[in-house]
Amino acid sequence: MPTPPLPTASALDTARLLMGVFLPTVAKGPIIRRPWAVGLAARLDLDSKAVGVVRTLHEKYPDGPLMLKLPIRKQAVVLAPADVDTVLAQSPEPFSPASSEKRAALSHFQPANVLISRGPVRTVRRALQEQVLDTSHPVHHLADRFVPIVEEEMQQLLTDAASSGSLPWGEFLDAWYRVVRRVAFGDHARDDKDLTAMMIRLRKDANWAFLKPVRRRTRRRLLQRISEELAHAEPGSLAAVMAAAPKGDGAEPAEQVPQWLFAFDPAGMATFRTLAVLATHPEAMAAARREADGDTSGRRFLPYLRAAVLEGLRLWPTTPMILRETTRPVQWEQGLMPAKCGVLVYAPYFHRDDRHLRSAHGFSPERWLTGEDDGWPLVPFSDGPVVCPGKQLVLLLTSAALAFLVSGQNFRIDQGQVLDPSRPLPGTLDNYSVRLAVSPRG
Ligand code: HEM
Image (cartoon, rainbow, N blue to C red; front, side):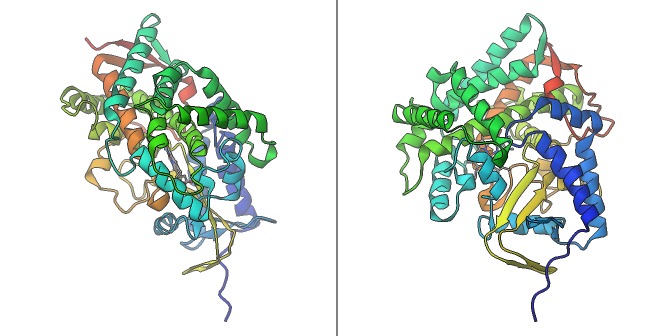
């Protein structure tokens, strides 16, 4: 007897998902955010509404992957928490992260990057990334070099902010980019805004995926520039680790690097958002300061602040859509998923599920320390074999930045959304419109 296909959403429910979840998420900019769209999403509460759309679908259809009724494309959405585990644990085979839209988008600046690779070269590229980023170690082996970089740049940021007494997102981002360039390439790249500008140009195109032609000349220039950095890598930088690392066939080291430059952006966003929440949540701020003041690790291992960043990313995940594509047909209890089928895990649906999570719309870093949500898909860095290999490095740098900032300064939201600990936190936190008032802690 032929295996039945998976249940399919009606045309109307498919349209609801496209309009209510895909459209606002893609409009915000999957590869580089569009500030106007983030602002609009915040004003119209589109991210909370998107969670509501997925919840309604889940209540209506059986508890398994649901196919969408689309004319050309095969696309499923994952509704059950256990199925998120299945998809992520069985990546990259048969659930490949190299989905067609991701390939189209990322090819604008890194066509041979691990994230959009398949087969044996993927294994080689992943191994290289893991080695350089020290994936399995909470404290990167270059932490002694990186943490002072973070502190110097945060100090410079505070010095610049002192004259006006206020800290807008744009100034924070400039400082963060200096951290990123120094960590990636070394001190000589600190003020190389041209490199960042090249990335920004290509990332803006990448937001349009196949709808925009690739700027081949700019991409060549970027990759050439990165190759030169690797050829003359500054000791103590990620580039130097990569230059020295053993590489398998097809590693394409230069093409692995743009992912760092691009992905450090959300880390900056997460830091700034977490700072805004700490500024408005006195208990969490007190816990953060207790940790920062009593730290004996040289700001290399700050569990509470790492948990605070994870919590910020739970509330406002910077990769809300985890996308996969099946490399072969996959049998589920509810039916057969075809080959070349797109699979969507919409993380906010699970991250904000107030039927299952304590304080789903509140700020509770403790959840990451107690293990109370173990088994529930809180996946800001994805999970399984394709989990973000930069996760620990991100947590190291972001927690060090926060420790430095909160230990010496008081922050208050001067401009931007209201974040009230006694009320649900908003579905979207528009970091672009936040301005923090800064004053010495005294
Ligand atoms: C807040 C910051 C970050 C978040 C939330 C994040 C999240 C993620 C997620 C969710 C994925 C999986 C994507 C997928 O499954 O489709 C991923 C992949 C990846 N991330 Fe990150 N990331 C961050 C920062 C970084 C940084 C700073 C680096 C490098 C320095 C990095 C390196 C990578 C790489 C190389 C991959 C591809 C892994 C693979 O295909 O096996 N990430 N990241």
